[in-house]
Amino acid sequence: MSETSVNTKKQIKHLRRGLSIYKTERSPFWHARVYISSKKKYVVRSTKETSRLDAAEVAEEILTDIKSKQNSNHAAAKDRSFEHFAQIYMNMARVQKNGVKNKYAFSDEAKILLRETDGVISYFGKYDVGKITSGMVRDYLFFLDSRRDKPLAFSTKAKQCMMIRKVLMVALEDGVIDIIPPMPKQRTKDAPRPTFTDKEYKHLMTTARRIASEGNPTHLELTLFGKTGFRISATMPFAQGLYQSVRSKSPNAEPTDYVFMPEYQNRTTAVNTARRLFNHVLEESNLRKDMSGNPRTPYSLRHYALQARLRGSQGKVNIYWLAKNAGTPVDQLERFYLKKMALRPEQIRNLQST
Image (tube, rainbow, N blue to C red; front, side, top):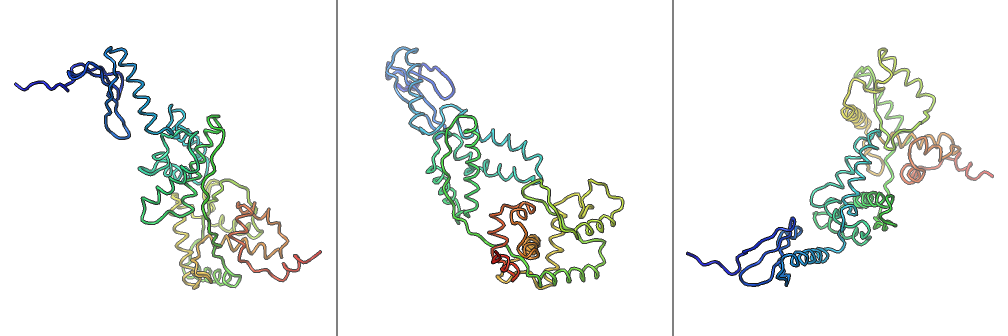
């Protein structure tokens, strides 16, 4: 018969999950056994107590001391953790996004927050919201780059920072923190959107009409969704006639039906179909790319329309109202839509007028 080891536990008392005390033949003292979940291992310390009740109190002190040394930036209570406020934000965003046309807005934020292994919650979840600093966010961005073959784009990093800021804003509104640390600034590179010249646009429309007459389609359709959600926007006078022409082709249409491609209930299919038609017209027109080699997209028509409106008004149109009507900030209008637009003589005269 094998002899019992002096290290065999002869008395064990489980105090709570991850914490217990025990005695062996080797020592008269009780030992505390603490499970460290972050390292997935147990740590044993002597309580230096022979009384079980005294040993239990010392064991609790040992547990607190070990946890404080593990990471002093972790939240002592769950309701101060980043994960807690991230969950509150997601619940709020889920309700708010239900009424927004861009149904993917919330899912994109959820991916940033919930991405496994290197998502925002995975990294900051246990941190106390009051102890998160700009340096920690910067370390997180370095961590993301270290996991990839190529560093993340600056715009992608900006989205990560914005998501962290949104969660911390919830904590600020709840009075748990007094200030949100500045997010590390990301370099941005403005890229003016591809557009058309007047001559190219007329050629595009001529080609589109030719293709339409050859194919004898019932109608030519596009569906546009605004990124800024609901807004009231005024059209140019000719749009009314165009709308009536489209309606005449669907005399039994209901007021709630889609104006363009109503036969497609899946609007992603409708958008993709419109995009293929547009690309076909571009290829036939030899206008697939602009003078700088940038590929044109259906959005190029929007860019052309904004430039044409400003040119057509000979510079008299109010740029603020133009931006508001288009659902874009004035800053974006100047940086992306009008940056490379050449001034006409009439506009120059207006600029020089007294």
